[in-house]
Image (tube, rainbow over all chains, first blue to last red):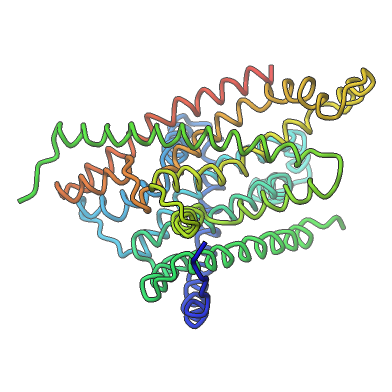
Length: 220
Length: 214
């Protein structure tokens, strides 16, 4: 092997990567909050008594889970303007990620809610709680506890998948790597460093979710 | 002057779909082999190989596939291996896939009651033969539905190989779109084609799972 590794040109531009990192964190945060809300709404609709909301949620979940994120992104960013819906790259990217995460979260939340015993709901109602209170305190909170590991790994996967937004020019972490690559021609070094960034982020997410779990679901 | 999106363009997309299937098969074979190699230390009784395998799996799962693809694409030539994009994509997808498959299979191995290990140990089998003759055959039955489910993930993930220039369905779509400038139609067709490939497998995985639960 005759190649000499030179990381110096990459590290001299490391501040650009930190700019990208901030955008990645910011958009991941938005997408997690909105995607989770969409997932809870989807899980509720999937349990509706009427037929059409159930059918609609099923179609949504299957459509998203059986197509690649990249194709969804291209469809929304490049395809929708043909219908007159023109979005800038970051908006299109965030919407795609929310729609994508919402489908996966719907499945996870639905499974968690199904696991809550029916008697618990009856007990809550018997204590005089309103249906809204019953849903949030008796159904959703214990369900969240069971599905927390699945949700946490889904959110981490989403953070990693947000790198795909670089393909439509959103200046997040991965896009910054390709910019540094074209400025320095140190391709291998750049992408190795950016992988290290994502690895550190994934680790930080893990610690963060473990801490959240301890605080929120601690037994009194 | 743009070309109309017609039958020819649809045939081009179908041709891309064929390469998506090809890449998926290559990547699945690679993931399967590497995944088995990872599974053995992952379920070892002795700590160090187990920790090493577990650390590797978590490291790969904590890296975006896009990053692995670029690293493979640029790293292989550094060692003097002037390989095609196909090899780089297959390698990256295999490394990525094996980490997830090994994890799925570990769950299946751990689901086998410890009595099976003990019984085969009592028969005088070595640890390796216990795993190969008693545990793995049973674990694979449990592992089939999630493995088929993972195949769907792999099909979807091959779309990322387009970024290093592998001409599969997603890349073909970009090319067709460049010629016709009918993005709604092109990317709509692409989504439908991926769906047509993935949905039957998803449904099959679900059927297998229901059959196993019975």
